[in-house]
Amino acid sequence: MSGRKQQLLKRHRQRKRLILIGMLLVASALGFFVSWWSLPLFLLLGWIAHEAWFCDHLFYAPNDDYRYDFPPGTPQFPAILNDGLLQVAGAFSAGQTLILQVRVKSHWLGRFFDPQVWIGDDRQDLERGVAGERFLNLSGQDSALTSGLLRVHGRFCSLASQATLHVLSTPDFGQQRLLVIAPHADDAELAAFGLYSRASDVAIVTLTQGEIEAEHYRDMGLDAAQAARLKGRLRSWDSLAVPLWGGVAQQQCVQLGYYCLQLGAMAQQPERSFGSLESGDSDIRDVRRFNALSLPGDVDGQPNWRNLVADLVRMLEHHRPDAVVTPHPELDPHSDHVASTRALMEAIELSTWRPRTLLLYANHLHDNDRWPMGPAGYGIALPPAIEPLPVDGLWSPLLDAPTRMDKAMALGMQHDLQGRPPFKRQLRRMIQRLLAGRRWPRTGEDEFFRKAVRRHELFWVRPLAAPQQDDH
Image (cartoon, rainbow, N blue to C red):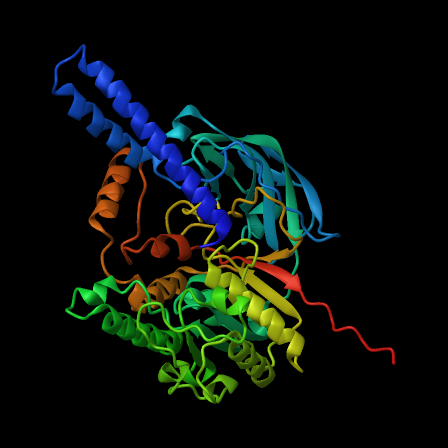
């Protein structure tokens, strides 16, 4: 977790404590005037209201505008919402990424139920109490939009009649050579299963074993080190085996075996080795035995930054990708994700092969833990961007229903996404289902089954400049 998100979470918890203290003071005051049994009832109702409507981690105001800038020359067309139909005067072709910038304002019910924008048969949910500029994803709606038959309307919210359509053109990266950077097993599936399962030439490299937080395996009678070691072996196996479900042969998958939540520390001290925080292991070769490709880190097995960058240089020069799929360094705050893209960029500078494009993804966010909001199976609106971001293009390919089901099954094979949520989370979901109308899919109980199995996948497109030529 990044320092910024830690600060936001700390501030959020401080506010919750102040609200709880205020509720206790009010309840105590009421106790002087009403029967004693009303105090626990008041506290119970307050807790239920909190779980139903106020427990989301939203680290910005719902009336903040999202801020996105697109590359210079991106076509923009004025759009009008007229009697529920979206009318745009402009020409665009199928397969382009269509983003509608529009002001959305919540109704009073939209403070208790998630505001929804219906775009034809698609639905994209927004923050409760929303009142600002938002960016909706119309990709795949080309035909209805050009014919003037695309219906757009809000539920628990209203949309301004004037809007702007941004049309972003990119090649179909599924037809290029791809390298997918996954900090942990399951990151490739969460971000890009739809893409890599139809790519003609793809390799996947997973950087860490993902061995920490192994409480589930401790419940089987193992001590902390044994549980972490078993979890690391299982997730390393997942990183090599699960992509086969998407048509990627095991020989095209590599597990580097570095240790979870240590990549950021490795970046700060490149020559120092950082073993596992929980298993006690410090030799990355233990989980590399199934790799089909020999790597520089195989020589001494040391978990240090120098080996990580050298391993990625070897991957680049062996696979020679046109595009690399990697975490968004500004949007995704997970320390391992930030360090993964940093290591990739260092490797690109050292490599004899230079990809043309980065395709950036965000499996986590600083500001909103529920994004993408709304139920599984629907579209992905752009995430909160309250602070300015680098100017990138966008590519949002569609996933049909069979691909979405295959993606859900791929997530179900990941050991870290199996099992039941804690009882508190199950109880919260039941309360939200009954009082707030939220729904979760039946394909799996982890939150990522809701967030990742969507009508769209979403990538920020960042071209890489060609290396400067030496004039001498």
